[in-house]
Length: 149
Image 1 (tube, rainbow, N blue to C red):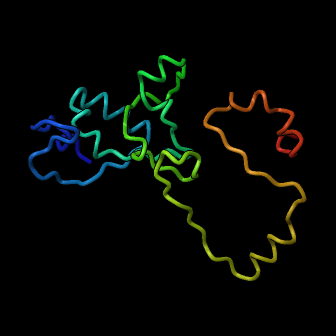
Image 2: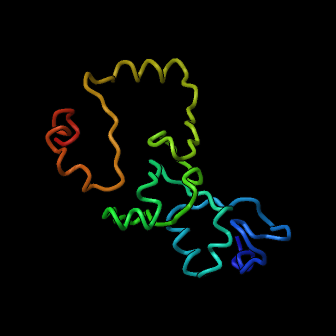
């Protein structure tokens, strides 16, 4: 998207645009959001209702709302944007506050299915976290499921 499309829009309200824009929604990640803030300054607030943030695991309201997060000591690199929590598009239904994009899977042929079944391990788990520091206190659990060897 070209920067000139994101100037200061006229009008008032939560999405104060009076004329048509060359786009309906802006899909971005936190790095893109930060760049938009740097280039647009205060005019970013006028476009906030058009933004959808791709956030793999979602953002809970406590981290999204700056005043609440600051009051409770929730300091993160991805928080404080004060968006409607449904504007966060997540690939995992981590929090019901965000919009769940869903999963994509492909159909496997018989050879691929057979290979997967033959190579299956006994203990298997899916773990995820936004930052490595989240796992420091869980090292023993990770060792138990044989992630750290």
